[in-house]
Amino acid sequence: MNVKQVKPVGITDTILRDAHQSLLATRMRTEDMLPVAEKLDGMGFHSLEVWGGATFDTTYRFLDEDPWERLRTLKKHIKKTPLQMLLRGQNVVGYRHYADDVVEAFVTKAYENGMDIFRIFDALNDVRNMETAMRVTKRVGGHVQATICYTISPLHTNDGFVAMARQLAEMGADSICIKDMAGLLAPYDAYDLVSKMKAEIDLPIQLHSHYTSGMASVSYLKAIEAGVDVVDTAISTLSLGTSQPPTEALVAALRGTPRDPGLDLGQLSEVAKYFAGVRKRYRAFEGELMGVDTDVLTYQVPGGMISNLVSQLREQNALDRLAEVLQEVPRVRADLGYPPLVTPSSQFVGTQAVINVVVGERYKVVPKEIRAYVKGMYGRPPGSIDPEAREKILGSEESIDCRPADLLEPELEKAAAELDGLARAQEDVISYALFPQVVKEYLERQSVCGENQREREIVAAIAAVLAQQTNGKQVSPASGATRTRGITAWRLASRGQTMRGSGWR
Ligand code: CO
Image 1: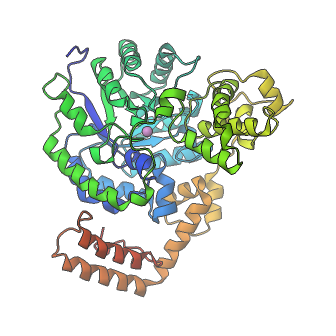
Image 2: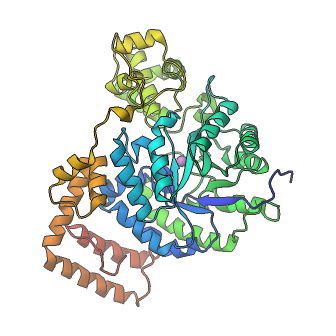
């Protein structure tokens, strides 16, 4: 093996965050994580990605769980391995820009509740949108993993990405992540990019890719040869498709080489079997892509985007215009200054392309998000906006040149006032500032539970009896029979109750 590094490559497993976000619509419950949490902790991973991204709002929205509670619980079970999260810079874990006081409080509380490594990115690679999150993470004692969103366009070059990494290093990054969210990074580009970064920047480099295009495992191997320090993989039973490359395959591929990560394949296999059982129960949330998305290879647009275009066209009864839309997508992206195609810019570009084709005149109709984008409200795009498109979209309206969050008033005090006694802790106020309606509804359900003390005790007693029937063994979600009982108890619990403290968690 021709390698530039001799130290073992570190592995971050994403099974508890990106893997189920990518494959199971972010639906994995904390109770399905805990039975293997200690085992994962003992395996020797560089870190475990367990929090952030879309997991934060989905736990409230769909699982009736508190994400802060999940973090504390995981930290109790995972004591040795650093916990890692994905943080969208000034967007925190949401979909708009928040004021600095929200970012600051979120990072501080995330650290206090057990987070170790903060992977911080901005969808436009505008480092001004990462400043506050990076500064506060550093101040509270967390690890700042500053992130570059990888994309392909006439403006994006490996030298440009290296320059951005240098800038992030100057801003205080502890490590750099190359985030290839669409699986576009080809193996020889990976080799070139990592080689250049390692030569110029004296920080650990971590690579995050998705299997969407089918290239991620080979790209990892070339990145490892070029000296990348850490890569992100997922336990096999929740890998491939739009998720990460399989952990076990990479471990086996590197066995006996200077970069052997030293993980035990037998132990990994046990964990894989466990998650095979977990995955079955979330079958209803499985995405469509299991293999390789050839559209990513052809059009360089991420998985999911083309199926969105198809459903938008179907709604307009214009499915026969797909070929025109696929030609319009790169034109709109060019007009908008070549944003990386990641949430939310992929939606902007796709929707505008559909509108342009269906309406029959470019930028005659423009959604308000795209107007805001062109105005600079999401930050500075990588390239300049096409003047003609700008004129049609904004007219004579001025765009802003400052960091978007500079225009935002503090939000926390107002959030606390609006919650009016519902907040149990500062964490609730932060969550409410991020997702007002979802979190208020969640907290209202919680406060109802609190009043029905008697009903709560009944549920706890039933759960305790059921637990005894399993011979005092820890409830194993992998076992069908036990699981049925578990679900029954959970259903009881979900009628206005929680199972906290009932022996089932
Ligand atoms: Co990802």
